[in-house]
Image (cartoon, rainbow, N blue to C red; front, top):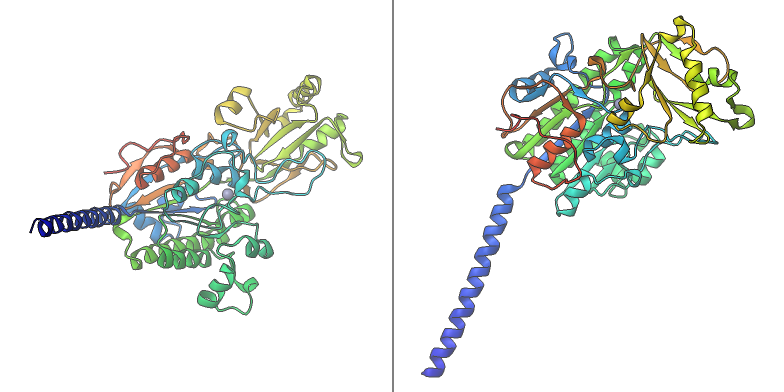
Length: 447
Ligand SMILES: [Zn+2]
């Protein structure tokens, strides 16, 4: 009897233990399921606030988001206000001086091969992709700059349209084949037109429905292309923003079909605005004339590296103060009709914005000027279309921001914010730690 009682007691204790563990596991699973959250972060390259404020643009999906969610009158970009540095700030929450992606193309002192910052490993600050993946959550990315080999489950990195590299770096292996077989049904992968934002959006929608990523970055890039061609206004810009808007609609529909509407934060933002261009300046021509740049013979003391609306001076020897003073004096003594195109950025302005510390001087264009890298021919030429890259303290270079979700204020307005704030918004919503992020969640955005 005693034996039986003991056996019974041991069995009971064991059963209770098993039950307790099962209950804890069930509770934990339930709590996690309840906490399951998603952020779908879309950038429209060259996205401007007027695309969702002005009725002239055919953007019904963006207008709907403005009605339902929170939006900004303007978002400050980084310097230079160009695609790769801006996108990297969005996923790191820090300025280029911290994340290391200073330009789209790498400054190459002795050879110009056109190397672009394609690879995730070139980013020198922690990213949202890492923070999400490290927690065992799911991250994915489509067309994002500097994302090749990023720690995500599905990825087609931005490789400047080079299909071989896209296929090589696509994750999982054979992803483009899978997409072609299941989504596009083209003869070859090369026939998938990723120049149309709707197609990129269809890929994002496919991933959302298949994998329900907790964090997804999607870069729609065709609007930028046509703003470069036509400037801020133009028929092709109109068509491109309408196409991107349709892409936003496709992604929103996928969020709904995946049953994620109630626990998803959908953000549509951009990387920079745009300015119209009427003049193209090649300051390397001035350096060549001053005997500081003899490009054909590989001899140089100073060289400008263009970022479209701005240009950055590199010295062969960073401590060559004599050459720097010569360049400064040369710029100061330009005739008035040339000088009017140039704004010399002060050291304080460059430091404040977190620009490349390896550059010795920066110029930002004025009065419709953009910059090029030529060192022969005329220094001042007729320009056309539009560009960006300018010091980001004017309205036109600001980008836009709209977000919707159950926890977001309805029809709430943010006067001004910064690209790095987007990182903070994503981190707060997903409840992940990004201690290096310098951005702030705009007051009043969340309910
Ligand atoms: Zn861009």
